[in-house]
Amino acid sequence: MASTLAACGTTTPSGGGSDEGSAADGTGAPSTTGDAKTPPAPTSSTGAGAEQGGDSAPDTGNAPDDGEDVDPPVVFDFHGIPDAPDIDCSAGGGNGDGELELAYIWIANSQQGTISKIDTDTMTELGRYYAKEANGDPSRTTVNLNGDVAVANRNGGIAKFWANPDNCFDANGNGSIQTSIGSADILPWAFEECRAWFTPLACSTNRPVAWTRGEIDPETCQYDAKLWTACDANVHLINGETGDIEETIPTSTGFIYGGAADAESNFWGLDTSQQQIFRVDAITFDVQYWPLGPGGGYGIAVDYLGRPWTCGGGGVRRFNLAAETWDSVGPNNGIGGCMTDDTTIWHSNGNVLTGYDLETLAVSQTIPLPVYVHGVSIDFLGKVWGVSFAGSTAYRADPNTGVVDTFNGLVGAYTYSDMTGFALQNAGAGGVPQG
Image 1 (cartoon, one colour):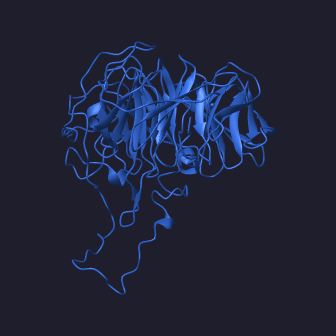
Image 2 (cartoon, one colour):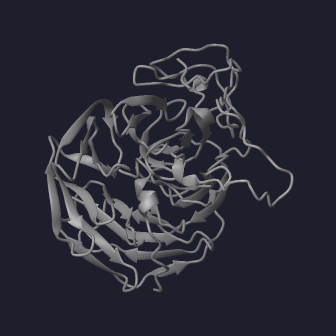
Image 3 (spheres, one colour):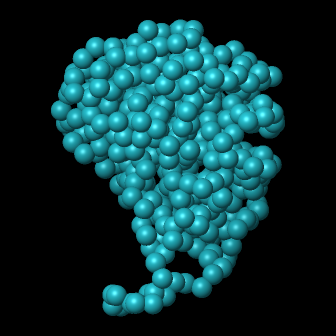
């Protein structure tokens, strides 16, 4: 169908590297990372499909905007028009007000190999997409400030999908955008026209994925975001428009399990194998490392002051950037993700969604849930979402009222990352630790 972190850290200078790295959890057939990106191959067929298939097609494309239903903007060939109004990017469309493209949560259905696009206000699923042409194994999703999503497959490969159908590419030239509109309408890989690109990666583990904030273009009100990911022990910086790998940074890590970007586009990674966090500088690509604090870590987040947090088992740990020490509270050595807003870090302690004060570390709020939730995210309306552990449900909790709403219909869901883009917009820049 068609629809329009404890001790002084160490620093490693950056250097070249390949996509090969240390062995870790997960499997996947090796593949090569292509530089050329082309739109999906045109096809005359339309319709939904519940299984993967379709004609083979080039995986990626930098598609132009298509299907606009408004007049194009006036373009002048000279400057200084006294009566030309400034473009105001505060009225929606990638500015982070939650009214347009940033009104969705994107959840990975790992068992099904798909991701779901769910309206955070109405709790209606508006699209479901295969994360890989075959044998997809999606986990972490990340949303940029334009609202577009990227999803990493644990067995290697990153896909980007546009949130706004107006940005999708009419590959078959039939005059309309052919894209999924719900869980019962998963299009075969070659037919989905809202997939922006796919970048294959030869990895035994490809888990973290995190957009940078980027700079906003005042004419288009769009952010020029780039994308961080980790392929085994290598960290890649990917061009957000084309999917091309711009930088490859080797790291002294064993198993990079999670990651997040701060406001200055630096990448914070969590290495659960060697029990450390690390920071990749967005400009120099130098890498710094620090051992984890008491209780280790499973999930990772960056707060409004640019401080990294880890979490797991109901407890949270805050890394103090200046002192390079950790503060810890709650149970240790468990699993689960976490996210922060302006005052609180949210994490699941059993089946209780628990909010810890960002400064005092005191429990500030608890909201009982029907089940344990593995992933936690926050939407632009201030609601806190929890995704069940390899289950079929997601829960939306209102911190103001304690009311919990349930979304059903997921398939082996497993996501604990910035599923809405709120964490990216909220993240601060805390400076460079000097260890």
